[in-house]
Every structure is written in C-alpha cells, then in structure tokens.
Amino acid sequence: MPDRVPPEVLRPMLRALVEERFQLKTHAETREMPIYALVVGKAGKLIPAAPESQGPMMRMGRGQLNGKKVPMAMLAQQISQQLGRAVVDKTELKGDFDFTLEWTPEPGQGPGVHPPGEPIPAADSSGPTIFTAVQEQLGLRLESQKGPVEIIVIDSVAKPTEN
Image (cartoon, rainbow, N blue to C red; front, side):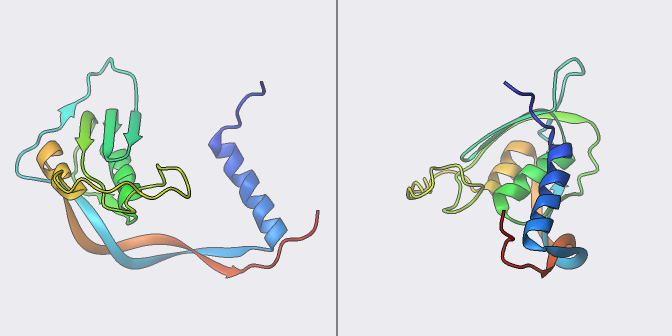
C-alpha cells in the first residue's frame, strides 16, 4: 500500500489541478461578518492536559466532541465546523486541555455525519444545545459578534477542459 500524501502537500496539488481544469480564478478578502467569540464564562471547568499525555487528539461524533491535549484555537475550529460560522478564540487561555462536550445537535447542524440520502435523525429536544453545553460543561461561552472573516471570492470559472 502506498504511503499517504500529507495534506500540506496534497492541497496545493489539488488546487492547481482545479485551477487548471476549470480556469478557476479566486482571491481572498477579509469581510466583517457574524462570528462567535469563544470566551471564558463565570466558572472555568476545563482540565489542563497532563504534560506527558499524547496529543492533540480530537474525536467527534454526532453531538459529541472529545479532546485530549487540545489548544483553545483547535476547539474553536471544531465548534466552527459544527455551527457553520467562524468561531474566534478570545479566551486568552494558554496551554492544552482535556474535555468531553456533549450536546443535542439541531437538524442540519454539523458536518455530514449521517449517510447521504438518509433523513437526519430527529433531535432529542431534552438535551442541551451546543451553546448550553459549552457553558455548562466547559465553563466557556459563545457570544455572537461581528468580526473579520477571511473568505475566498470566485472571480471566474469555466466548464472543465477535456482530458
């Protein structure tokens, strides 16, 4: 079995291929958009990771996120993927943390973790939302704000070239 190509090598190769095949032209812009700021709540409940533990490591399932030796920026990124909105770490917490976060996902919330074509399972409305879970289980809060978000703007694209 061949070795896997690391993402930092694969991404530029795929980008070049797509740009060539579709004559794709893009540029990056920073725009003021709705974001969530991840901030420290009233009671800090995060557990600092043991120095000897291995990581960072995150396991994700529908409505669950387990982290070992995870920095706050990585947690913010994972929450952002669940919410579909940029989450910016404004906790000023340094170091790495261990945590378990469990919530009841809203319909359509989070990346596709169910088979395509199958209906999304009904949410158990008795469980906490991700906002409540972040506050109660981690001692953090998600505050809705406006802030700078880097986006990719498509300038032009064409039908693919033939092989």
